[in-house]
Figure (spheres, helix red, strand yellow):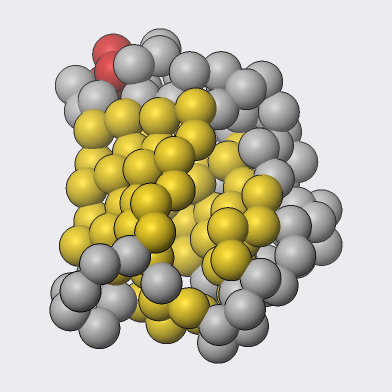
Length: 115
């Protein structure tokens, strides 16, 4: 099974993006944080870019700062993947709250594969 890759290097923003505007499966995700600031990757079941002030993510992944001793996290969602019935969207913010609008730090790398 092959899929489409998604790559993002964050900017000092919420990094709002629609990865896939129709139903899909996310197979893996790797997040590397070479910065001294923690961030939160938020995944949404949505056919358009998320509105971080009001949309609620289906998954939030805490990404510790490099100074915390963890620079990279990898997630494998198996052969079937994590299902998104509407679409796959992403945001990266500076705090964990579901509707947080704090800008993330620039320089975090996110890579994934989906169909």
